[in-house]
Image (cartoon, rainbow, N blue to C red):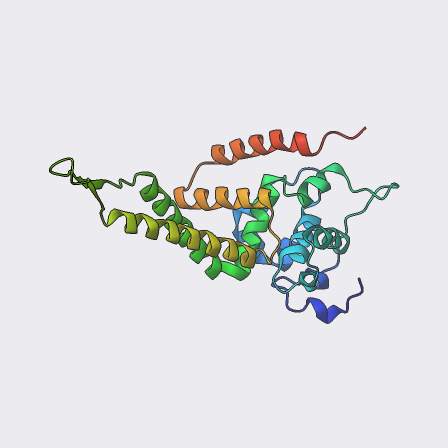
Length: 237
């Protein structure tokens, strides 16, 4: 795709104006304020990873006009400066990043999206909390019915459903509405660029912020994701 420089002016961090090789942390000090951007990026240059994140996920990126998620992410790789090999293939770790298999990079993506969507994030956390509470209420719900026995064989038993039935129905409706709203907020937060693995990382992120979990928690997540990635990205011959 062809772009003009003004196409990138609405991005929160306009990495387009920064020559490749220059220290993005000096140009954009906000990156140094958050621990997520100090995370490891494997054998990928962190500068290029950050550029990829901006192009692929910034709400003001011109790439948002690309509806297909993978097509948008591949275009972001090109703009970020990642190179393919002689066969036109990207390195395995780049594939993993694009498919949201790298936990530390997922955390960077989530933090970056909060730069431009902090209000959406606050609402999302509130809705997630509400959903958990509603699900807990539904799981522990008791719905007794009252049966009035007939006085003799000529009178049938009468069954009375108490107001609990209506309350249970209301809970189910609330849960359905919350799930829909949460889905819409996630799409908005990630500029319609979220997938299953990134969604899992978002849940981990929310949980870690809520409970202030230890680094050991993130280490465990990384180990789990490494195990998952083996099934999606077998070592190339």
